[in-house]
Length: 145
Image 1 (spheres, rainbow, N blue to C red):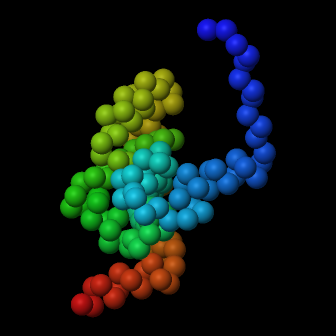
Image 2 (cartoon, rainbow, N blue to C red; image 1 turned 30 degrees about the vertical axis):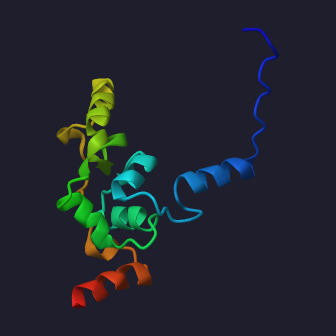
């Protein structure tokens, strides 16, 4: 194949930022992805404090609540809570777990998380829970029914 080489793309900081915001469903909530889809786009949602992961995933989905993320994790099992990148707790799509397990097990042992290297407790405290009125209020409204 002969021809002219492709012209390199011109990137700007604002263009790159806009692309990342859109790809991570921060510019506009995703209408076509569920909790597992969002976790996949993010390459896992940090979940040392589970309520933070619920917020991180839920706010990226149009009309979602914390209950939707919990349902995906505990009932549908489309999300898994496990050690992910950096050896910290993450929510990952269950369908991607074999790829993550393989990739993380390929790390040199000096870079892998082990129980003896853990510090602090996973899970956080209730005081660390972020407050977002509409997001949490929708859970209370649903629970009151």
